[in-house]
Length: 416
Image 1: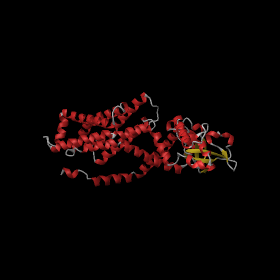
Image 2: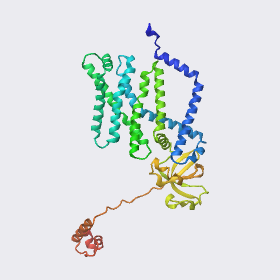
Image 3: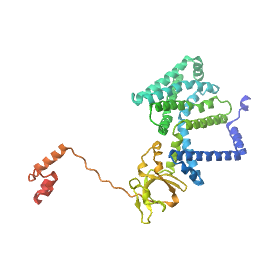
């Protein structure tokens, strides 16, 4: 029978596991080189982002720290890939609703691209060029109506109407209406899911805020939303077993993510910046550091570093750790804590590069702030003075309001 020639899923898994075991050595060596490449590249990107490439060669000597660094960078990249592919998962759900004729999935996937591309365009237009003209509910309604309208326009084409009829029925009944409502809702949610990739692009952008930059980011966001559908499109258009199709889809997703890293300004920098913060390579609080004997008190600006001489005749400064990898340590003044990623590169030349083994870290002393007294207007001062004059008739016209406390002991209680 023809059905008996089709391999089952367990047979396909056994075949793939056997193939993996056969080429296990080659795969582990390739993955090792790939991981080392990611680690070195990401570390280079981070040191370049903070403007201290001179620390890169010294930092790569720490192999154990580099291994943990690679792991966290890869996990952060996987999180970014998951965010960028949120639309492609919902796109796959839309195509999979045509469950009666699996052989037509490649045609259905191509047809559904049209309303999604139009919906992404309206989403980008409203988000970047008309962000304040409409409320959020109005903007979402416009996006939904545009996407549904584009889906309705597909019924003008006979091949698409035929695909709908093959999956439901030729007559308009409750089942067909319910199917179309579910399909339209899934497409609308797919378009709205582009907010995740767009937010990611905006949060990782490190360029200047100009009119040209807005156009570039808008076009890049629209292209990212459209290209994020490619893995699902390849999955449904590729011929072969399911494992082969999944492999092609995952390969396409990885390749598109690399393209995204190349063209998105600041994405790789933001990934390494986030990984450095999670590993405490970059800290967000200041502390007291006692430096080595080679640095003298006259080498520092007292206002910038808040220096003082330690009892061991060594310099003590107040700073925060911007980079610590192995024995390499970069200390920056506390005033740079609030600087953004794209601005801190201008000031890191004033930071101190030293070694962890030669520096002693001391806990930062708590700072106590007094609550500021509310500032009164001249009218409020006059009213308070007049009230004190009424309550304390013994006060002089030339005495300030608080002079009532200096009255005779018998009148102090009444004048308070």
